[in-house]
Amino acid sequence: MTITIVDSPSALHTLRTQLASEKIIALDTEFHSENRYFPELMLMQIANLDGDVWIVDPKKINPEPLGAALRNTTIITHGGREDVRILYRELGLTPKRFFDTQIGAGLLGYRFPMGLADLAPLIIEKDVSKGETLTDWSFRPLKTKQIERS
Image 1: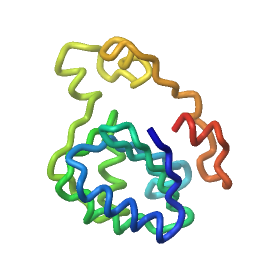
Image 2 (image 1 turned 45 degrees about the vertical axis):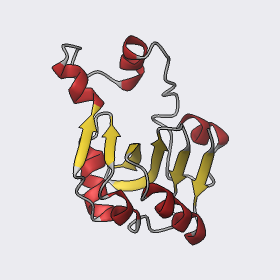
Image 3 (image 1 turned 90 degrees about the vertical axis):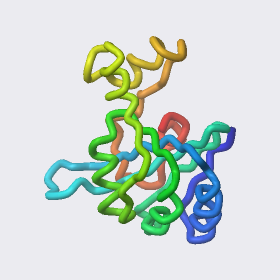
Image 4 (image 1 turned 135 degrees about the vertical axis):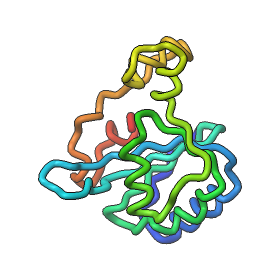
């Protein structure tokens, strides 16, 4: 497992190339919506099935080129309603294949809506740290805790 910060054009190009060959990825966004007409994207977190993680910093680079790389990828989110809106607005992406684990869990009879930190131990028997959920994602540089737990 590697964690790669994507905050330069060369890192974005490398990520685009990698994502073009991924069949399934997990995606999460961090955004601020207070006092804004549209939520402002602060961070994108992308992971593949091998456990490699990319943290895309839209404050340093324009993430729009990732839209083309993700067009044929299955995207998995948890509570991803806003993620889909942000993907469309920021990347011009309407996912062809999309799965929301929160909705899937609800259809299987789990409490809805249920946060990922509550659901993960029930399904995969592992805790998922969500300690930085309410952090200020607009602050740069990102803190080590934000990167490790995002």
